[in-house]
Image 1 (cartoon, rainbow, N blue to C red):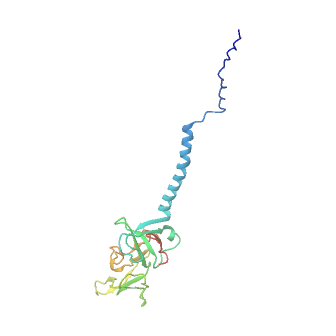
Image 2 (cartoon, helix red, strand yellow):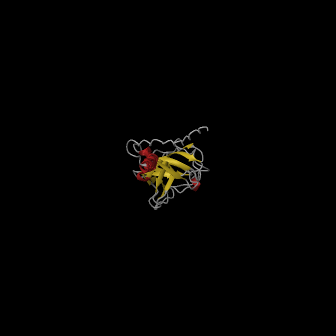
Image 3 (spheres, helix red, strand yellow):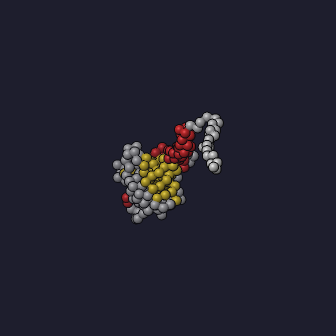
Length: 212
């Protein structure tokens, strides 16, 4: 009788225990918070930068009327630089953004008369300090018409506006459709009301306003 081969038994392989992690177990919540923070922090800095820019450096304004056409058209969006007059005063022909306490709104007009000057408008032409030469008007839309000044109650004669120190006389480029120093109850714009000089239009399309 043949000897039967003995049965071979196989023992399942025993895996060695996993090595214990060295050091503290990572805190997933903390790592997630750190990741979020790394994204949020720069966004906060960007937001603060734009708040600072809008509050102290530039003014965004939309022009809702045709008073400055054709230089600035209705619904054009412009940027004014608040720091333009930090060390300098507004000059003649500057396009400025100013506010009026009565309405709380911003307005965009062009400076024509400076502090201490006499100004009169005859047949639409602006004359300063009795000069016989009118100020430039190449930016004015349409025909020049109208006489504006202070009416002398005794003689009925039209006399020049006398611009006080610290104030400015402003006009729209579209003289026939502009509510400006010719019609404003207080006539003159105080220096403190001027918030910046218009420097460019950014919508629709770009246009340099500082050179107009």
